[in-house]
Image 1 (cartoon, rainbow, N blue to C red):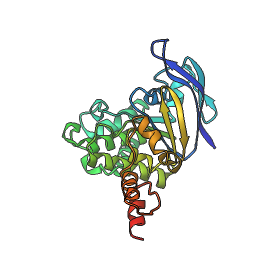
Image 2 (cartoon, rainbow, N blue to C red; image 1 turned 90 degrees about the vertical axis):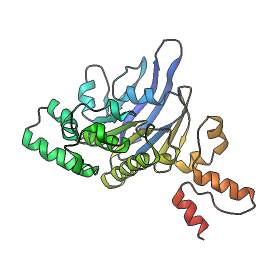
Image 3 (cartoon, rainbow, N blue to C red; image 1 turned 60 degrees about the vertical axis):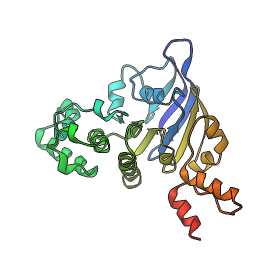
Image 4 (spheres, rainbow, N blue to C red; image 1 turned 180 degrees about the vertical axis):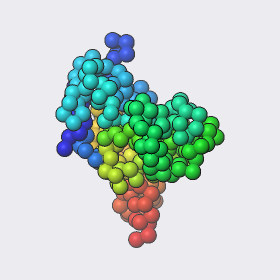
Length: 270
């Protein structure tokens, strides 16, 4: 089932150059889609258009068959949650508990039910023992897990991650990527991740590569990652496993192309 549809979407910040230039994309329910591209490619603008923070000049977006309009944007947002890149800019409450509760309070949820929801989703992201901690005392990865808990507590159908790991150290990045992967595999949640993290791409079902506001190419991770030179030309990184494979190939070793670390280890152990 097509859960998210984008057709001929156009948006410009200055009415001169299109930040998003006629893109079309469909996302199935339960898919994990990554959108990659260099700075200024338009990928984060797409995220803001999807949740109604920006309004397209032309084209349309639909969620579950309902077109996004200025009139129904708040209704549509009940189906979509977003986590932004800077964890420090997302905290509202003075404690983790208060922060997760913020969106629930806006929905006028009963306190007894709210406590149960906070406990459930803080546990789901592994932060149940930090509920009374101040956000400033948390690591970057922990802050983003709390932000994801707050998003999940709103019971969205689609989770949008806008560069959610770009400001994290490798440990924090792995924490968030592992959590997102678990949400996808165990909960069949539809995930749209705007990312620079090429290793995250290997975990997704489908990859969209943007350049100058347009979709440059799209396909499975295997389809995209084998186009190594094109990715480099677009100023994008390639996974360490493929870099290692290319080095082995230059040494005359005949191995299959691994698209992630696990595949590389399996290939070398044969």
